[in-house]
Image 1 (cartoon, rainbow, N blue to C red):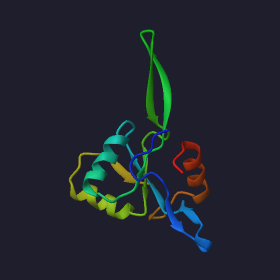
Image 2 (image 1 turned 120 degrees about the vertical axis):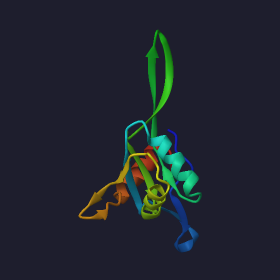
Image 3 (image 1 turned 90 degrees about the vertical axis):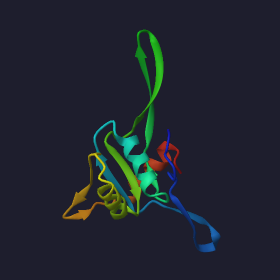
Length: 128
């Protein structure tokens, strides 16, 4: 599984100096399927300190009798942003990017990914 720049959850020192991982404050941004990597690279150029997560899976694809290993997004059309969803969307708007994107929202609020689901996702993909 491949994760993109800053994909590890944030580690903080906790009680008794044991580190714990922050699985909260992750938000999803939707884009066109196949444009996930382009959106990630655009955001990384616009905002250098942003933490993004694009979980991928390896798939064997056979073409003309030859097997190729391809890395495809685990969730086609989605990337995850840590904490700075508003900042990310503002930067994309100001850049007049031709990219199609929209945040996942509910009740006019950005929808935060479930903490337990993010923990499971990072553990399954090796991001944590």
